[in-house]
Amino acid sequence: MVAVLAVVGGLLAACSAPAPQPPTADWAFEAARIHVHDSTDGVWGVGEADEPYVVNVAFRVTIGVAGSAKAWPVRGATYHDLAPGEGANLTGNQKGTASFPGLKMIDVEDVLRGQPLEVVGVWSWVMEEDILSLGGMEAKAATILQDLLNRFLAGGSLPESTSEWVRYIVDKIGVFGALQGLAVQIGFFGGGDDPIKSRVFVGLPVRGALGDVVDAAAAQVTFPGIDLPGAIPPSINGGSIGRLGNPSLAYMSNRMKRGNGDYTVSWRWTSPSGWGSTPTPTTTPTEPTVTEPECIPDRLDPTAPPICPI
Image (cartoon, rainbow, N blue to C red; front, side, top):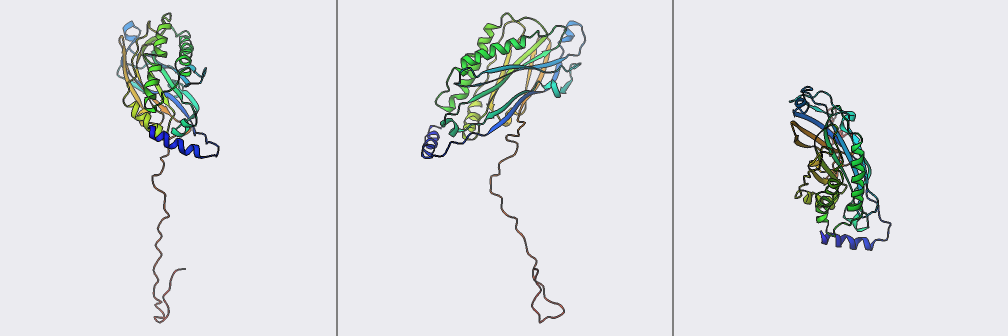
């Protein structure tokens, strides 16, 4: 990868034209499906059917750009009366869709021109609705997470080797960074609806050779689980990190348990702008071959020239 950077760097230095900007794409994250294996409500004698929902605490931060972190919660609508053994595809507001418009999809040459990397992600809570509500705890968690992302990523700098970027980001978000710091700060959070577990999903807007490096590195990294004090926010049951557009991020499922509650939840990254939906042709299209009809003899006058189409 260092050799690639050196070659591209030399070519860029030889050019005097204004540097092109990387392409942009809109991305979104959403919960897709919930399956109830065992009910939380049945424990309390209020019926066997659960009322599950998700809270997606979304974030975006540009590494090395001070104060660039933003975090905000999106509460999905409740799916009512999902009994043990039943599953449902989520629709509309139930998905808790978090939107990330205008992401710059960078490659190696963009990095050499000084384009910083923006990191986006979602901390997705899986919850079951009860008499009590969250009471704004999701907004408090988003505020704390934003401050910590400003400290650990906006205030940091990426390693020189692109192959180390994924590990660096996981460390700064996970057990050595923002989420571990959040675990220390949220001890005062209390009850509310029944939590199941949560997961963290991180997407990197990269393409080309840099995307290949991220794919290879992400395949070697496991996102850590983190136990959080109290009931809410729910403890983190691992997660994922990868290149936006990688097929492995198109549909992700995880089974999670807490108490008697036992769910399998599925999530996905999508691109409303259609990034990656149209494959790039591997060969240049050629004109179709047209076979002209052959000339035929004049049956009325065998001595005349053959009749050919115009």
